[in-house]
Length: 212
Image 1 (cartoon, one colour):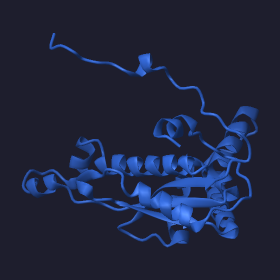
Image 2: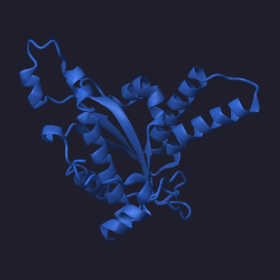
Image 3: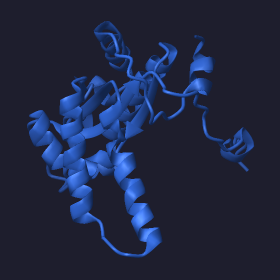
Image 4: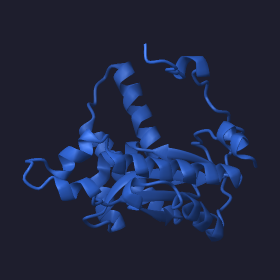
């Protein structure tokens, strides 16, 4: 598949067929993700593939319990519906053939060598620079998603399950300095999917061609 075709075909998939994913396909997705740009070439990522259905269901149960505990439980239909939606979008990964838990670790920046005595911390500099570590992780995740699309799979990038980040980290044995940063559900789509409408290029593109 050509690059433009993969970009245009990519869509968030939340219903998967029961077809399993070959281990070599999962490894190839991660290999390509690892080629993404990262701040100072720190490559602050690790991709943990979970393919066991029982483990995925237990992870979804952990998230469901946290949703029930944290979000209000009211009789109003709109509130109940919203809670059901949040619960679904945070736990549907249990039915995917594979899920990547994406872990991230801190990095050392070149500028860290210059801030001694300035009163600035690494975290403050990181915020000033727009969190380049998180930007790096996003580049790797997007690369993995496009690689999966090119290989005929569907994916969904998840942040909802992080509502139970601490509990999931304990379950997955992710230990400091690593922490869970995102999840990606992967599998063959159960139905045809299409990308949702996007803004036109005229809405999102601007060019400055003079100093005036």
